[in-house]
Length: 304
Ligand SMILES: [Zn+2]
Image 1 (cartoon, helix red, strand yellow):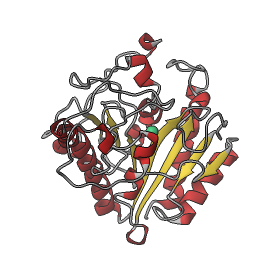
Image 2 (spheres, rainbow, N blue to C red):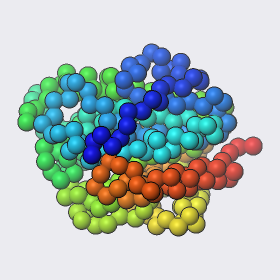
Image 3 (cartoon, rainbow, N blue to C red):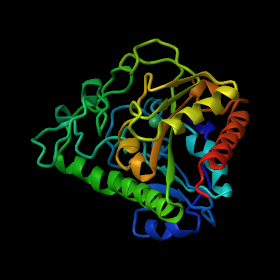
Image 4 (cartoon, rainbow, N blue to C red):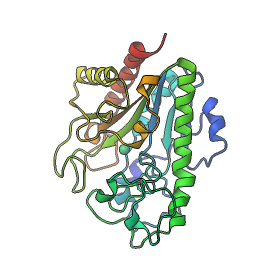
């Protein structure tokens, strides 16, 4: 099953963001920068990476780890780049370190020693899904050991921080150019919640879940508009249930200042063959609908 996902020939596209990336480890992230940024929309895909860092040291197999991956989400939205929309995507897996957590959201139970840096617990550690995951969705542990503080700090410095710096740079650039930015933080979710999942185990999920942290990370009309477009396309849509959005929609959002961030979770049953990492026939139609959505957002919200 793992062979189903081909190696991608996508590199760093030329453009304003490429210069920012130049100072970074290109093993960490992709920046797909449009030749001309034409839209106030910015996309990011923090959980589609699957390059396992050599120092991961997890006892789980690659296949087990990839169950947590938002498989193909970056490829699903990639045609947006040709429409003038930048896309940031992580190359590392979210199980190694999760960009969608505060850098201080360290699970102290994972550590063999005291954490000497900022500690900002979110409560996600209870489910094993803080900055560094302790367990998979079904509760199986990722490690047969505790980690050193230096190990955790290394992952923050070399993976988490560059991802956030790059996202902030893309958002700032769009805001500076257009006076407003609309950030879609793109994810996928398993069709049914696992044992440790948000929203409860075994519950089937909607086609799409939008998260604006209960109306705090973007203008309410942005969430409402995206929901209406998706409903008109025939999808079932829920808002903030069970996913409200986490750190990446929180960190740089400021709706009053024209900085809007919205999380979108796409159900894997829409585009993957069930239980596999292989695209289904649903991939292309979903991709086409997403491009329609991006066009609609541009028509409705782009400052003119
Ligand atoms: Zn995700």
